[in-house]
Amino acid sequence: MSMPPEPARQIGAIARAAAEAILQVYHGDFAVQTKGDNSPLTAADLAAQRVIVAGLATLQEQLPVLSEEAKALPWSERRHWARYWLVDPLDGTREFVKRNGEFTVNIALIDDHRSVLGVVLAPVTGELYVAAEGQGAWLQERDGGPWRRIRTRPLGDPPRVVGSRSHGGTQGGLLEQLTGGDYEHVPLGSSLKFCLIARGEADIYLRLGLTSEWDTAAAQCVLDEAGGAVLDLAGQPFRYNRGESLLNPEFVAIGDLSIDWAARLTRGE
Image 1 (tube, rainbow, N blue to C red):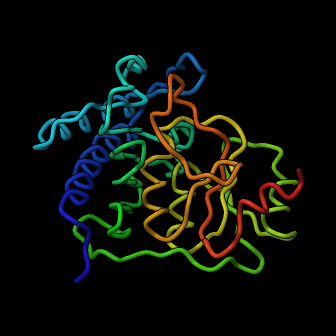
Image 2: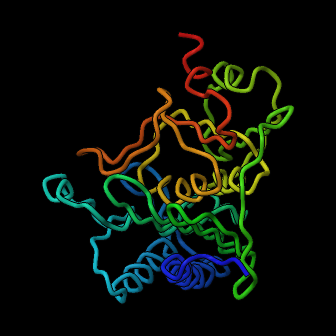
């Protein structure tokens, strides 16, 4: 039976432990704080952060951890990192607050600016996506269940475009360039958008607007290893720990690599 390599399964187990902590909060009454950027923060974010950091500390290879819920370390220190963990303990806090289940735990291993191991877990459904560079991507639909290799699909007709449920944007013109015209739109929260493409159930996710490196790294590895890619709007693959800012450029995540997406991105220029 095909299954992920041991390191990916180890990190998946840490994500499942974080999910247990998240669900304890999710199924009770919780308060919502507001962070400096006006995004919400709950006890679940912090509980998951503690579980993940503790879990990573038990691994044989000790690496720095950069996380949304930990104070961002200065570039003067990060610039020397070759390998580190990049973590979003609860991606989709707005979806968590709405109790719609569309939030995830994200853990990525960054090596030489590339996401080389990625884990994305949806606590409410129990779906766990894991990937390791050069070794493929897998889905485990419930804790202890079988592993299934996942792959992207050829571009649909019409293409299926997945988009943010909580962050709107004027994307119509560029989406028409990318899709060639008509497309079906599917709203979805958090990094699950990448995973829907990775499992062959959607084709494109265009994000115009701000995201941070921890929002995309784990899911990018899953999508890359499933046969897709995450590209900036110049058609170049995403890289991490690029400089002082932890903000990503705008991007498109795609499943069908047989298409010249760089040409479609620049067609209107």
